[in-house]
Length: 413
Image 1 (cartoon, rainbow, N blue to C red):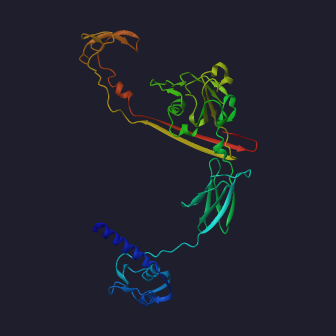
Image 2: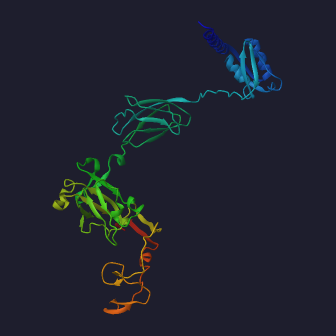
Image 3: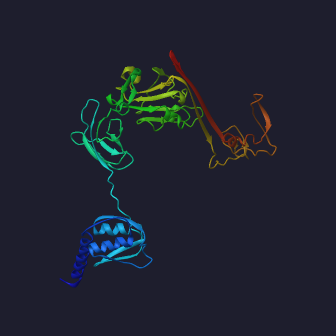
């Protein structure tokens, strides 16, 4: 064995010996004594002496000591002093340094047990049980039972997939019995199928996708169809760049039938329906989904349900405002306004734009839209700013106010 290994073994042995000495038993119990007196009693009990520099330690400070081990006694005597210590032989060397925090065990925590069942009394295995506001938690075992150490005044949060979460105040209880109820919102997503029949989405054997009315009004498009762009799988919205031209709707490559509150809608572009009036849109994909509509529903159906009166009784007023504006173009194409229609420097009715020179007093016979006759007129650059004027700053604002009332004898919107 070389000297390096021997040195390492000696350091390890000394470290272990030091730990063993600090853990030696010593029984001390002192109340309201000075640090100096506590150090004297510790020396009489254990033989360990404190070595420190005058001024580094406040020996007049009053302390309480209740310890069964040497290290506990030292920590309690030096608690609150700006010092650190090191044990060498029978001496406790004390020096200026960051104070050692006094470790206090939390003896106020207590154990609570319980069981978690569903509405039918069946055990729920693997339910999560945790103390609210912390990371302390556990899970129910095969018998749906749990045990957890909690703080005073703790609140337990019990949760499980498919069930509504429950909070239980522990108080003075040592055992609790918890019942979880099924969460109907999680288990039953309702969609509208053919002829307005409502079914749970999970119970259908064909593809159905739903879009809530709130998603249509958050950021409005030109019309309902353009707002649906990218929101339904398999629904292709072909928006047109032509003026006042509606979007073309294709569902899986075919034109679907559009149903508004159970009535077929001929305008497939959907530009006559206000987004604020729509409660939901259900898209039935394929012939199986819309079989009740016959051959017209062979390519699928778009079911639009409009809003009705308020669900709660009383008066309800809602306001929705949306503004779209054109902020300008990055660049304009270059246009010429120096030459008339025609070619080779001669005015003519052809589609070319390299005719006679404009704005120099020359004349030519061309059609007058005001007299509806062919006349000889001066060749001028009329309407040379038409392109720029057409592409000017503009904005569209849409304000919607709806009033709903529900009472004893009915409702209106």
